[in-house]
Length: 256
Ligand SMILES: [Zn+2]
Image 1 (cartoon, helix red, strand yellow):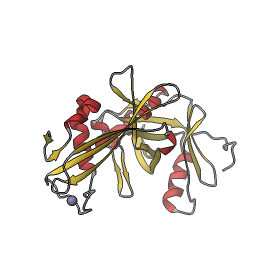
Image 2 (cartoon, protein in one colour; image 1 turned 180 degrees about the vertical axis):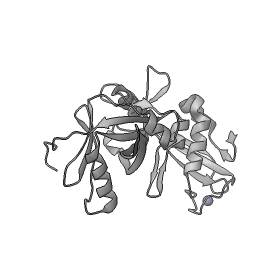
Image 3 (cartoon, protein in one colour; image 1 turned 45 degrees about the vertical axis):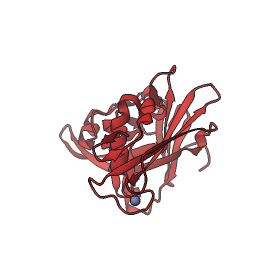
Image 4 (cartoon, helix red, strand yellow; image 1 turned 90 degrees about the horizontal axis):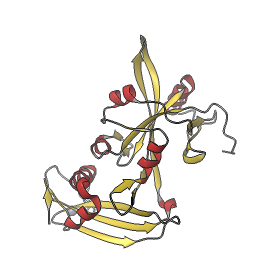
C-alpha cells in the first residue's frame, strides 16, 4: 500500500484520481480531526489510513458521474481501503454547505468598502468522466461555464482583488425578510433564511444592500465549519472558483 507522509492509502485510488491522487490523500487527511473508527482525535504526524468509497452512477443523459466519500482512521484502527459501488442517479442527495462573511476592501481612496461573501459548496464532491478520460468536477464546470474564474490562491485579500463579474445568468437576491437565494440560469442553487435581528446576518444584509455584487467563493473541497472557512485544499486541488455575482434588486417572484 502506498504511503504519503503519514497517510496510507489504497493504490487503486490512483485509477480514479490520476495525478491528483497524492493531493487528494493529503487534503482528506488534513481535513479529518477524529478517527472514524474509535472517534479519538487525530494527532499531527500519527500513522493514518485513508478509506475511500467511490460511487459511480449514470445520469439520464448518459453522463457518467463519480462521487467520492472518505474517512480517516488511525492505522491501528483500520488499514486503508477503497470500495466501489454503482449507485442510482440521485443528485438530490447532494448537501449544500455555505457560510457568509463580510470582508473589507480599500480601493480608489475609499477605505473599508464592505464586501459581502457567500462561500458555497456541495457535499459530497461529484465529478464526471469526459469521454472516458479525466474526471471533471461537476460544480466547478457549471460555475466556469457561467463566468466564474479559478482562484490563483486561497488568500482572501488576493481573491477580493482578483475577482471579476460573472455572467448575467448568475444572481444573488436577498429580500427584506432575509431570504437569500443564489441562482444560475434561472436554476436555484442555494437558498437560506437569515435572521435580520441577528447582528451578523444584519451586517451581511446591509453589505449586500450597499453594494452591487456578492463575492461568491465556491467549487469543491471548501472546508466550511462553524469555526471558519479553509480554502487551502480547494486551491491546491485547482477546484476553487470565484465570481462577483450581481445582486438582483427585484424581490424574488416565488413565495418564500
Ligand atoms: Zn482510531
